[in-house]
Image (cartoon, rainbow, N blue to C red; front, side):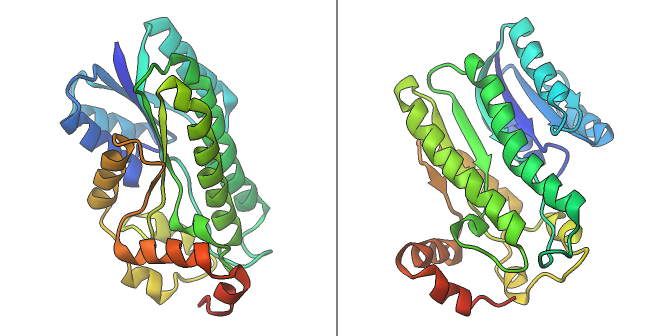
Length: 251
């Protein structure tokens, strides 16, 4: 049995990834989805009867990750696509967002992504694809969004290194680094601070970001960046000193 596994599938880019995978990859037998909101996962499963299997739970709980891996082993499944889309961010300066959210971002954005990936690696054959949702925030530090940006830098670095490690096994790893995307992300992030105007100005459509992510992943690209503005940010971060960029960072 060939499957895809998608985390963060209850909303945003994870949910959109499930829909596009279901519509575009008919040779997959099932899509296994995980997130905390069982009701939203069940609603997604109803859209694709018989193709979506639900694994509700919090990925910061290792028992949830172990349960998914055990189910893969029991089913004799091959994980052809793994999409790590679970994650969240909180705007605010150091000391504003609180210890619970600081720890939460590090655990779900970094630790859970890594642990789920490594739990499923034994079940990924040649020509499998890992798609890790990072962010354009990974390209440079972001005052007022420091912890989130740092966690996404981790995702980018981890993905690039993992891709090199797995290249001999024929497994590709793609870090997806979009700018602001039109999801519920910012309504959650704005508890302590408002989203800067320019991020709203450069907002992208979820469908287009996910479509490019899948396109790039299946062409073996290590990084997927949607849109010219974010490609320009990436280029600037490569050639300009970080200190100079931070002088012009508009928080």
